[in-house]
Image 1 (cartoon, protein in one colour):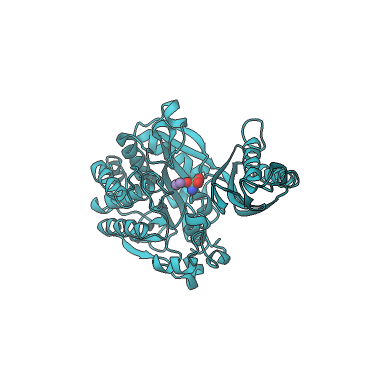
Image 2: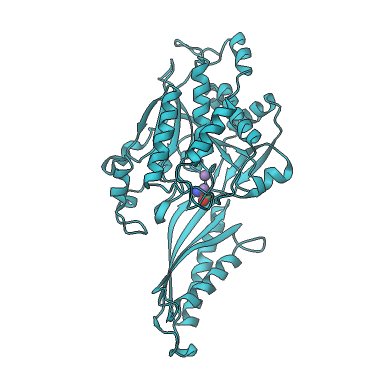
Length: 437
Ligand code: HGY
Ligand code: MN
Ligand code: MN
């Protein structure tokens, strides 16, 4: 399928046959994952590279050196995204973008995000080493602050990339009181120019993200590869419970306005709106602060954040409304005020059918069985998907565990997933994207 210009989009038959035998350098990929894991390693055996911290910056610098070793031009955009570019002979064509994130949750694992970026670097490295000329430019991106460090909005960098960044995110301070603008500047970004991080409509042909599953399905079902069908939607709600602090020994129970007792009831209500008989698939309260946080004072103020997830946006809306009613009732019964402020809504997103077929074909060619499954975790892909077609490849998570220090994937699965990414890239043809979804 030659469409004119200097380089044909599809390789000649002999070239295509040689490309079929290309594989990633597994030991190099595994060694880099271990080296990055050491940056921000915690005594508990996990990794803490929260966005905007010095360890996050050190990790990004390490990955920048790998991008350079892969022959890519490297830059940090104004939103803090780390970008490697391989222009190739057809820089005029829309980009094939590969990426994920490099930040972690506190005491998280070594693979969430980092695996996808390092595997994408490995793919670029193999293409360069073997002198493979693609008929389109390729970018590898380590997106900034996917996890929403210190209460800041998650999927930060991908929002900026897709032209969806909300400028109010730059105002104010994080949960530690640090001005967000200063944090971005210190991380190599440029708060005044974040809109320039947006890639124009039509500039991205497709986006591919390789990631660990972070759940139990692939391991339980016995598949080394997952082809993601859709990515869950998510809403986070910031909750403030206002009661009255008072002496723990002298204040009669009936007269208390205990903010933590009210918050505890709210946490149970969040659990009850989720699950098989609930309104949404899952819901969690994973953080909470208490004031004045003293064992002998009735709590006067509690702040927490609820995380609700479902593939149906209507269900998320309905759950927020249900929680508003519950909050009013709890407030009336406990003498407190329970305020709800939805802080970030991320829409669910279906993966592109053409790209999914390409991933399936790459897995078939490598003799790797695959399973179609939805993602219960959020990903940069669902934000980039607003700009361009996207798809995701999963590999199994041992024990279905993630966002914890014990997060792991078998080395052979890590390498297999990277090979599927490589062969999806080799099979990618911008012309394919003209076909039906
Ligand atoms: O929380 C999530 O789903 C993702 O890891 N950011
Ligand atoms: Mn994560
Ligand atoms: Mn992730």
